[in-house]
Image (tube, one colour):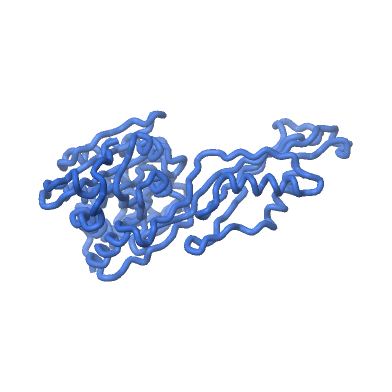
Length: 389
């Protein structure tokens, strides 16, 4: 049984003790930069276009780094709020056996800690070739503004490991997501004479009821997409006895590969026009938007990942596909093949979130092994990529 790495516990506790709600990650990002610099890693704090904080760092091996692979270790520093129901202080980093409790412990400050330890270890070695980048971004739990800003700076690597909690089931693809706002338009009239108007709420109800009869798209690897009505709104606020002439709803729609935002809008528009009487509606795709993605099973990096995984852990990885979205979707869309792998635990976004701290050191060791034997998966790779956004 792997022992608990005390250094990893100390580092993770420091990260957990620093609250970092989405959009308020500045303090923990400064902590990360200071730790990296103190440990010999070239790192910098970046300010996004709208004032958020990202961290970006790089290390290079001592042998022909410019001709060798470029690997990115990627994570997010933000968390959701603690919520109720905790039996441990959500910012204390309480350790019980191999479980460390705290908000963000598993999602995903343990992954950041593992990547930071790996960067420190790589910076101390000169017996490898290549470049490894590290990014800790803001706002993943909300709108992924940190990842969008980093990618816009020209982020280019041969592959990425997103250090999300998938230790036993590395994720190599997943659904995408859009939010669709539907606005049904009606005609006002006095509420005592509803037949003289067109009730937008009734129209929305008929449209949503018709939508429930439509099949959800499926993909042979990823499975079913999904759709969920998040809210429905109508009226102007004050009590008025009038037929509502406007009603809107927001639908969270998960996309499978081959399904696009245009497909969704076209399906909804045809549905509205096909109802009798037809529903007068406007459809808008609202941010954030994440395309679905798949890392090809025969991609050289994925083969390399599987080989190193088997060597380090004694068995083949059980590759899986995500049912939710993450910054991995955006990295893949930018042309960087992505795999999600990092320390796991339980109770993500719930009370008493915890991580198996034994896996922090194991993940760090794996990241180092992945980087230092990386020449096997990049033969013929062009050396003209920019890896310093």
